[in-house]
Image (cartoon, rainbow, N blue to C red; front, side, top):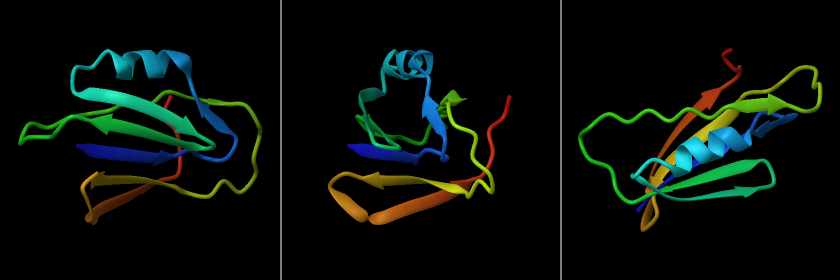
Length: 91
C-alpha cells in the first residue's frame, strides 16, 4: 500500500468535490483528513504515470504563506520516503 500525505497550505481546506473525484478513482483505497493533512491510501503503484489533483478552498487569509509538503511512501517501508514541496495553488 502506498500513502500520499499532503500537508495543506495554511488557511486552505480540501473541497468536498475534490474528495469525491479522488474516491471515484479505482487506485484510491481510502482518504483521511486529519487536521491540515490529507492522507490518500493507494492499493499499489506500477510503472504507469499517475496524476492527482486536489482542489483547495481558501477559508482564512494568511500572510507570508509558507510552502507545504507532499510525502509519498510505502506503508510497510516508510524509509523510502519521497518529499516534494509546493507553495501556491493554481486556478
